[in-house]
Image 1 (spheres, rainbow, N blue to C red):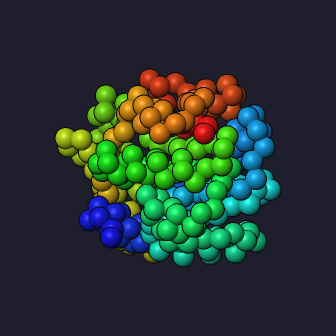
Image 2 (cartoon, rainbow, N blue to C red):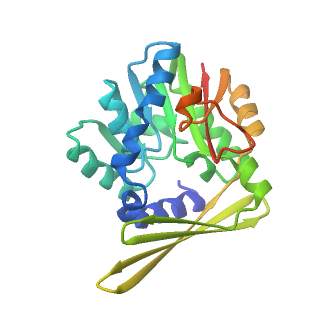
Length: 258
């Protein structure tokens, strides 16, 4: 049975799916393939990949274009619906299913993967340490021997230190205002989306809650479940081989092998 928090997260993304790719244009995000080329070819060849929080399908498309066989899943049926539209647009065929990454086996059975990805700050929806460990354990368990898990998330060490209160993103006629509320052991993101058309602006509001997982805690949990060769990266820092600066970078990606 889904927890209350997972139901709320699914509801948030079901509502948010329609404007997600406006705020974060899929064509722009496809430019990030060089990072995955670097990661996948640096260590060992991988064939089958699971994106266990695939959202609107950006990384399913990107990894499929690199030649890998990709399965995708997401808690939000709205996101999966939008992902199928995007895959069709880019002529990509992949298996997409609605599902909770704490229960991957209930979605894809006993299938094992060379690479499991949990991207886009998705792990931070795990509000309790129990759920966090359950999700990480499930990702680890569906890996083949020597398989790799890769997780990307916001750098909460920096966010909690800076106590940033707002951020504005402009995309054409759309304006997105993020307002951050800091509570004990959680950060609430309030999103106001404004669209201007014919000199008239309309607004939609969204709210979601994150568990601010610190770098050291995530690394510790990954080590406890059996990950080795744990490394941190910044996907956007191509010039310095994706080196992560824990003091200044807004996001990071962490990898570990089984």
